[in-house]
Length: 85
Image (cartoon, rainbow, N blue to C red; front, side, top):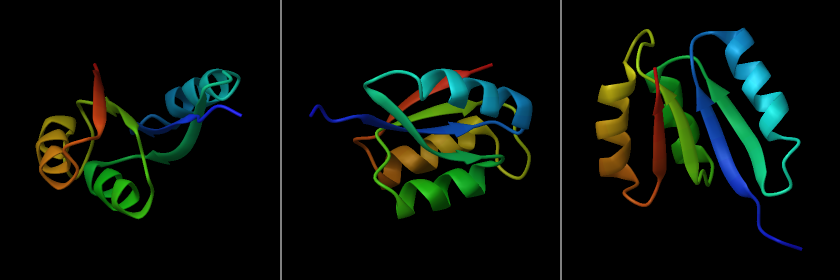
C-alpha cells in the first residue's frame, strides 16, 4: 500500500475548502487530514498532525497566509506550502 500525502486546506471560505477536500480525497495518493479557517488554526493543526502539504489562502482572518507561512516554515521547515489567492 502506498503512502498518502497528508494535506491541510487553509481557507476561510468553507464552501471552497469542502469542495477542494471532496475532489482531493478522491485521489489515491492524497488525503485531506484537516481544514482551517485562519492562520492560528493552521499552526495548531500542523503541530498536532503530521501534515505534508498545506494549501494556504493568503487572505484569512486572525493571521494571514503570508504570516502563517513564515511561522510554519520556522517550526516545520520540511512542510510544503502551496499559496492560493
